[in-house]
Amino acid sequence: MTLMDRTRMVLARSLDVYRGTPYAERLAGLHERLDQPLRVAVAGRVKAGKSTLLNALVGERLAPTDAGECTRIVTWYEDGHTYQVRAHLDNAAPRQLRFARENGQLDIDLGELKAEDVKELVVTWPAQALRAVTLVDTPGIGSLTEAASRRTWDLLVPEEEETPADAVVYLMRHLHAGDVEFLRAFHDSEVSRPSPVNAIGVLSRADEIAVGRLDSMASARRVASRLGADPNVRRLVQSVIPIAGLLAETAVTLTEEEVGQLRLVADLEVPDAEELLLSADRFVSSRPELGLTELERTSLLDRFGVFGVRLATTMLRRGVAGTATDLARELAERSGLNDLQDLLSSLFFERRDVLKCRSALLAVAEVLRARTLPGSDAVAAEVESVVASAHPFNELRVLSGVRSGWVSGKEEVVAELERVIGGAGGLAHQRLRLPSDAPGKELTAAATDALTRWQRRAENPLTTYELAVAARVAVRSCEGMLADLSRH
Image (cartoon, rainbow, N blue to C red; front, side):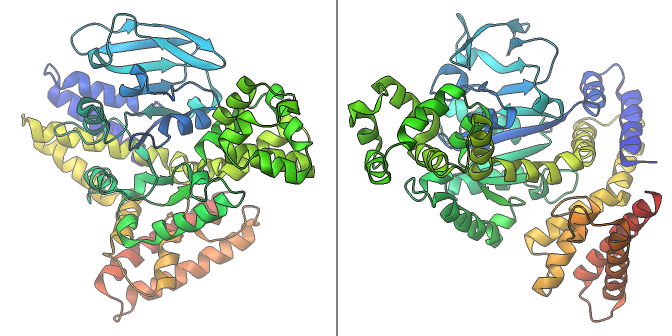
């Protein structure tokens, strides 16, 4: 019986126990949630670039990036057959809202409603990216209005109920005390609760780290690497990855007209182009003979930033990209968007059933703590049994132990342990650090060698207790890989 099957059984039995109570609807919703896409929240401090990054992940400019009313409301973006925006209110039925697309961007009309009247917005939008994941845009932590910031805390770190998000992408420009406070609150050492294994850190607006120079992303990668290696950060997020969010958003929404405008800059002599791009003010106001109006130049800066204009024109000049499609692909790669999508795929999407089951079991546990009824003790025992015995949960528990420093040892041993139990992705080649096209025979040989190594470590009397416990989990992971490889 799979973990998903066991979780469904727990939910069915809890429904039987709580049928006819106020908790029944909540439990029924959790059962439906198991069949829905993974829910990933995008969070961070105000002006961290959350909405811009969300747009890049969706591939459309849906989330508002200005300081309007809608940025102060929790907004869900989900796949659907129709285009629709609904406002969920605290003390009234959901209301459908009007919206329009202006310059490719979604503009939602709240009408007579104010931001504080709306509990959350739900944007239904047919999009390929939203079929696998529902994205949640949250108000900035540390907002000028305490109420807006509180909404994010209430969503992701609720006091009484479970969080509706299965995972979180947390944006930071540097490690602020408020970031640590929030991520520590989101983290819990229990496997059925949120933990660093379902949180990714993003060093946002990375192109600004080196003041928009062409080597900005290289500098950002070094900063992100240092952050990700910091023990305090490793306890809070799985990994830290640099992203130039504005460039990423523009890459996936690039137009031929914009490429034509960039070519006018790329066709200048190199010294002239460099002088033009010394600053935003100079780019807007100098060289009137260029053939770009002030409005067009301002629009390019809004869409690309100085770093993006420099990078895009350099690639056009050098022939790295010749068409809008080529340029979009190059910009997505250099913005860090592709790396983030790969990380989301390996750490979240491939593990979506485990993350959804964790969320569901957490919710059942909260209900059981809130109210005891005849039969609830048996359900509680079953929840505990699933959490304790399901191997994917054991892997996540060890990952949390490694990240928190509970499991320690030689650096290379701990690094291998983290990979084998799925810290870099759940596929066999990722666990064994082999190329994605490695043949089955090579994978089997590597898994067999890994199994032998971890069996020896588990049985070695000199192995510390914590590492021995982790080694037994690694042994089970290797056995699972070998079983999968033999089936395929």
